[in-house]
Length: 187
Image (cartoon, rainbow, N blue to C red; front, side, top):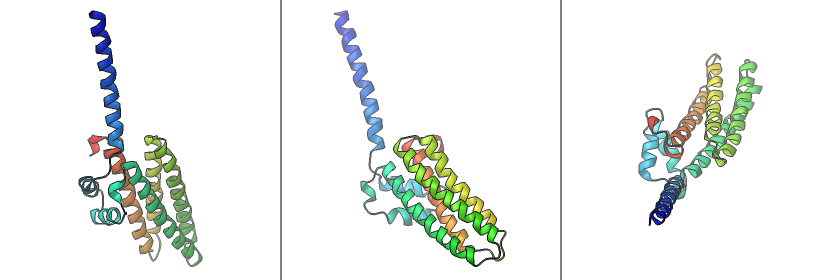
């Protein structure tokens, strides 16, 4: 009888562990809800009107899980970075402050590289490396912005574009922290 109970307790324990693992993985694959979108966009660090505009423009967002939404946001951000990089390249030919514009071009190219690398880390569920790469995008953009503010006249259109790109970084970081890695301290 004791052996039978030990065997059943072990079986119950194994089933309970499997249930916990499966339910935590299932949560990661759950689809994004309107409430969660509201939570992402109403963070005090995120420009909520831009966030809602971006997220509401994503077709079939309700069919995405959080890693899927993150991939879409990285693609969206990469398009914005590429567009801004083209503007920087055009400005390179028509500026007296070639050094600053050239630096911004290299920083934006680095941001594109960080975005590309981050997708691999996201797929591998290496969230520390993913966070490092996504944060690198923000650092590159902020460094360029600091340099642009020293120019006369200040190219406001580039600063506005960088604000949009950086807001997407904040959205991605919020999704990572609150819904993928669930660091509820920051949520």
